[in-house]
Length: 325
Image 1 (tube, rainbow, N blue to C red):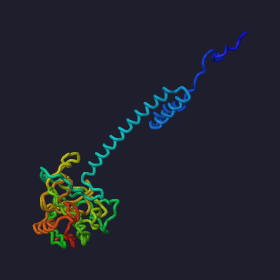
Image 2 (cartoon, one colour; image 1 turned 180 degrees about the vertical axis):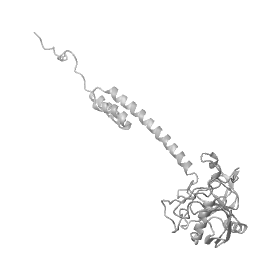
Image 3 (cartoon, rainbow, N blue to C red; image 1 turned 90 degrees about the vertical axis):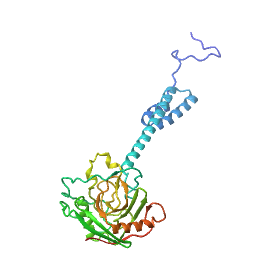
Image 4 (cartoon, rainbow, N blue to C red; image 1 turned 90 degrees about the horizontal axis):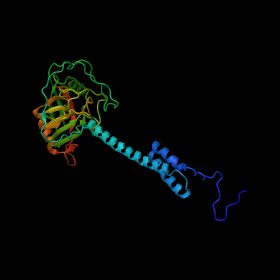
């Protein structure tokens, strides 16, 4: 015969064992989410610990494990994201070393020792296959691309003249060195592409003395609606040569193409009126005569509009015509 327990004693359990406590569901969720989405695992972990403290449920170990794993995974994610962003910034800076945000040439070579332009050695295929593929950006002024394929390299020198409201600028185009580029300049000049356009940029820094022209929009972003590859001095380097990233001296009197990276030549060109340091990725295609240098010196003496050493010329420079002589 069984008797009820005396007053003050706890009740007996059916099988002689205490009843098991349920496991807190938030603790389980915290552990699972710690692997799937760490921040959510951290939130669930704190919620479960709060509930376990209040209800006495099991799952404290699961909740703590979820919290630890969640914090570790979150920290690792932050580290990976930070290093990934630094890597992308480094790559982007390298790719855009010679670009500005608006697509115009950035000319910011630091002053200091620099090599001279390399001697010209004619490539075997010089002028054999000039190509001018279209770009996504339409031409600033309607123009027909120059003829593709083989272009002559003889005569080696072609005379041209750029007339401006500030004076004449005589040019000798290096057809025997950069025939695809000379072919392009001659085509644009003969079609009147440069007529009544302004030279939109003057740089007067110690290591950079350049007047930039050839954009009918006057903004630094306009072009002929096509592009073409670099020639000399880029042609004297292998594509993997680190020398392509080191500045060389473009001497006073150099006529070179502006670009926004390899193979992006169009219509904009650089009139170098003082020794200038740039990577050898700007095609040299001619020389400026003494009369032209005197005109450029007069323009440079007026400086940059608003002060500074890079921007719109203080003296407006308008090309009235550009023709082959």
